Image (cartoon, rainbow, N blue to C red; front, side, top):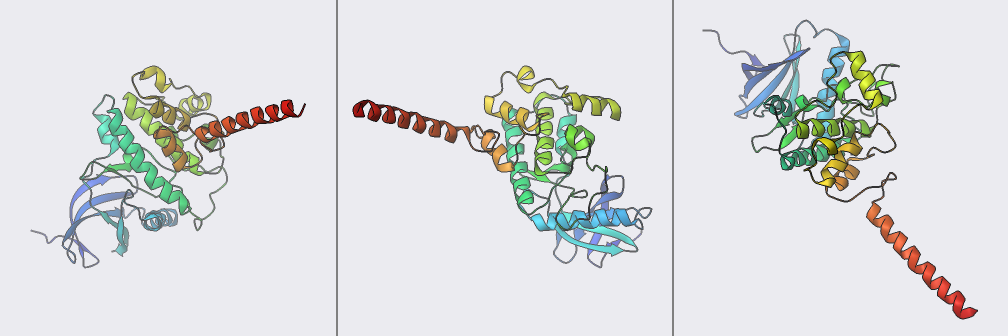
Length: 303
């Protein structure tokens, strides 16, 4: 019987939790602290590729910079026999994508909870100058308590990230707005757009853009060819519908600029295009009307 492989003299590798295009995620045990962890380990075939190593380092650095309760925590990084690895907190391994794969819409209150958790994480990330750039169901992981954490900052953008090559767009196309696909530089509202698409899919049990080919998908997104959530789910509360539909707006001027704006809308506080709550605008309008009446009365008295 072979002895278990140990990374860095500390992390005992166990079963495989998942595999991706450039790395596998292993169940592991931290021998020093006596706790379960997850280890993301680059495949040998890509460990020598500079772009892959840079992306791996970006993932660890960005998640560590954000350090938020709703972001998967990075405990350590290292190199084992030429293979780079990241040590992450151990979660159950179930993602929003897994929940969606079961079929059928999710309960509205559950989707609200997912939105709040992810908005908290994105608000913290954006405040630290970090753009995730790949928000999608597979990157939203459930905790043991049913809350959600954001994972995989592999294509994140921060102040110290290298400049993106011209016309090179990172992310998953089904969760990118048309103007981003066209090559516009990434902005915080792109993460919020992607979250809106995730919420749409969770509430309807169907893909927002089901086109299979990349060309067909890009055309559909550019045309905004998505059935309004309000048509598919007339039973949902207006604030939730407004939040999702505005986040997904084809017009970038109408989308939320910050996670705080999107959270305010979700909580029932309508937010104007400038970001100022419409409730406040209404109050100012009322004050203006009262002043107008007073001025008119003064004029009449004077005359």
